[in-house]
Length: 335
Image 1 (cartoon, one colour):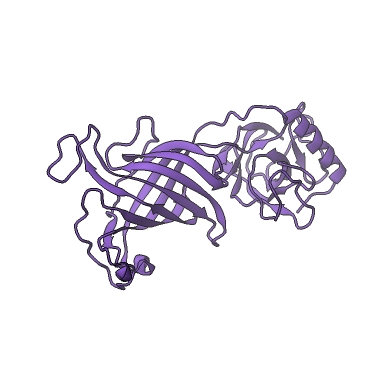
Image 2 (cartoon, helix red, strand yellow):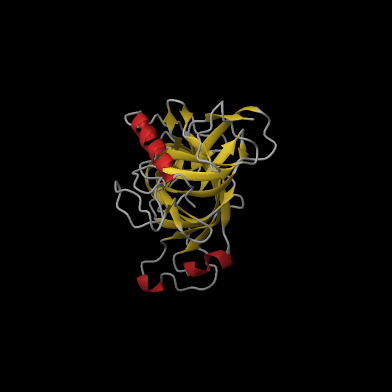
């Protein structure tokens, strides 16, 4: 999938990376909507460990009491409207906290149902891991001030991540579960969670990435070339609608190749980017043909893509995204 003119590409990449070195990564916040289904909370309602996960039917738990633990599981089905797979895992401890509690509930100035930590592990539809977002939270009660629109409850802090989400931070909340998440005894066999059913809810996070994708900037403009002749796209040599182009970038994240962090990308096999990569032109998705680490480069990537048809002559806005995290827009001359 690499284009012709490797010497020109190598020179372009070398100049661009030198130009990029030392620039601050002032990453803006990104709104993530993560949709989850089949949510079940398994309450720790028996001291007999021999009975755990043994009942094949849907079970009703003993009433959840303050300070009781549970494990909540759910299936991640979409991120920002894109179908994915994944698992929500939370480990709440019930608080039943409010300013005016009844007997057996905790008193506090804030209203919160529980406190817990957990993770949201996101995978490609074929099961290949993309990355995991780690959270600490307080369930129930209002969403935190400044959280994304759509979050109506819960107080989540994003405390890190792995894979495409290494080093992320942020905050947010969730919708109320509709239908409500199901409560079950820990004696219920969790292998039957999808059969027995559960609730649905969406999480809305304001995510601050440690790194974001960027089209490399050269003195003459963005590092984007015509795939047909390897010449730079410029005002004197503009792109055209429907044309296949190649851009060079940084910050696309992990690749599907066995290399240590900080090591150059190999020539064979090619280091295909592990995360979903998108190119938007004037807000319309371009067709991404290939995204991978450029051989011999460290944090230097090549993306081949075809421009949407119907672009009008002038200047188009192009934005690169990896794992739903957008970079800054660059301007692309169109003839």
